[in-house]
Length: 120
Image (tube, rainbow, N blue to C red; front, side, top):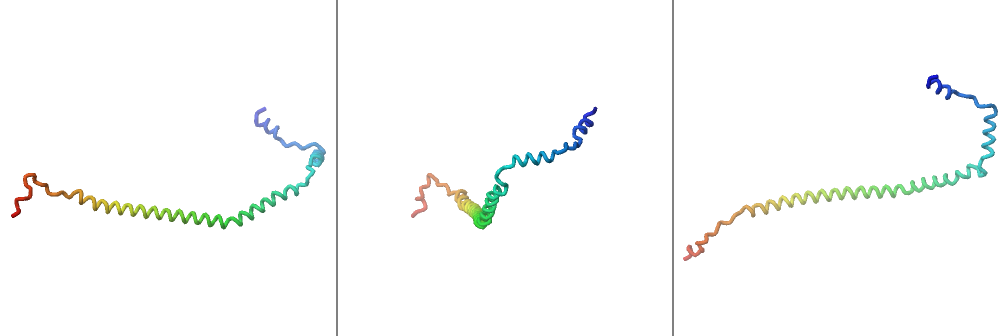
């Protein structure tokens, strides 16, 4: 027998024996918990309701905090940009002031000329 045929035979539907459903129901009834199921579900349901109410009431505060942080980050970015622009302009002005002084040369002083020759 090939593997496909063996697999087909192994997975073929089989009817359960007579009385199977009644035996399962009887066993479930014997092993059923003593506490009814709805009592167990009340606590988690109230917890879920409390969590939803808390989330709904807290969401405006969380949104306000989010908005204020976003505005603070935008202001910080603007301040940093302004500082970069100011730094660039100050560096440019500094270069314009320092460069002419460094390139200007004074007339060399002659060691033999003491400056007394042109006086009366």
